[in-house]
Length: 255
Length: 379
Ligand SMILES: Nc1ncnc2c1ncn2[C@@H]1O[C@H](COP(=O)(O)OP(=O)(O)OP(=O)(O)O)[C@@H](O)[C@H]1O
Ligand SMILES: [Mg+2]
Image (cartoon, rainbow over all chains, first blue to last red; front, side, top):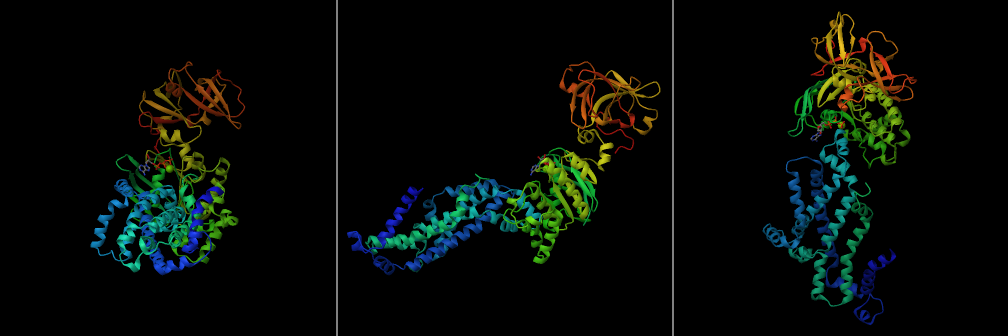
């Protein structure tokens, strides 16, 4: 465990160490300086970009959850015509790679006039993430006994009430899993952000970083600082949800 | 509180046979009705239609006089106890019990009072803050009961609520549930396939088979006057002996011919029983405890051989058979054998030939074709 931890954490350690040096100190190998961080904030609007990423991420995930939870519930618990077929179609949508639909999607979103700000990216991320979340929630909800929901319904709940007050509270592990996986994916994604968010003032951090690396600076410590800013939130989200996540990924085993 | 009325209620799943077939059954306000029958006979389906969890294919269902065919579960005001309890795992015992009241919008104070009252009745007071996971099976069962009784609903619906408990606890909860039901006097439909529960708990018992109601009556009536062969064979443990035989007019009385022996029925028997024509095939039914093993060689005894004796402590089951040993097929063997329930101290051994006697008032006759009881007045 310790060994694994060391191997996992070592790159971070190097990144932190490197970012806390000036260019000269980095080349000579010693010293400490905030210079790279200062330069970074001067070169690109880090705060603004992190905020953009956060907005896009949060909004996308909220949409994914808002659609995925009821849809997963419906597929798992309600009997309706052709539900299996529809479910398979949705699950197969999961297999379609991003690159394959990116251009048609771009055309669509452009036609809707959404390519300027956050909205286009949010729509695309939500559309990409929803099939997976529907699949995961449906699978998880199938493990929830029917009687639990029926007990709620006899106690006076409607289907949405049962979803919200009975199913969601016991689906925290599944929700955490979806949130973390989607957060990491969306936060780290460059392509969609690059294409769909064309206003420079609304650029997410990954795009900022790409711009940085594409010629604004050649300073390794400064790039490291930028990478840290970009990588850290995903780490934090992971650590916060980790407690639930483990349960989510092993669900079904200890039941 | 209200009465419940099934009027020709039918449930068909897909294009299969009806799971519940034209069920007509009235449950009085405050009555404890037990639905019993073999697995797959439609008990759960009937209960779920009553709860509103299953659509009704045809017929009319009324609660308190109002037709509820299309009423949503939440507007029916019935409480259900599930076989696996279905407690809400993320809530404490108190929250579980108060949940329906909370949805209904009752005040916190009111909810707390009702939950405490119910907890006292169910002896759950000290567990109110626990999660269901930290309770024993019996305690969970009581929480499920509590969730139903705090609501003071129109009716209680229970689907095999005791089947997940061990034997000892089951006996305890059996009388506990009966006690609480009497205390609250709410119409109750209780589903079970355990005949002891059916016999001991209900005011009346409804026996189902393949979705069709066979008989509704008090437990004792069901036991003493089964409406047909199925009910006779289903209720009682061991079940009623059912022996194919023939009726034959004797010198002055009707004779019953069993294999190569016969017994006579008393004079006037034919007046109180709608017996078929002489020579007809019928099925004779007699409860194991009504089979007397006698030394008597007098009239009206059958000579039989002891096959096996099962001592059960307080009583013994004697397996008897007639005719030559070594019946050709097992089906044949079954129709040639029957069981007597006698006191525990048995003096005979397998192979002995004994006489058995059955007093005529304990004999049941069923039509060999339809299985319907031939008692005058039918059911
Ligand atoms: N959802 C369903 N879809 C199709 N058929 C069903 C469904 N539920 C029940 N059935 C069928 O309806 C019939 C009655 O089932 P039901 O569950 O009411 O029986 P039961 O008397 O409760 O049996 P048990 O004692 O085993 O619980 C069975 O033949 C069953 O296969
Ligand atoms: Mg059942």
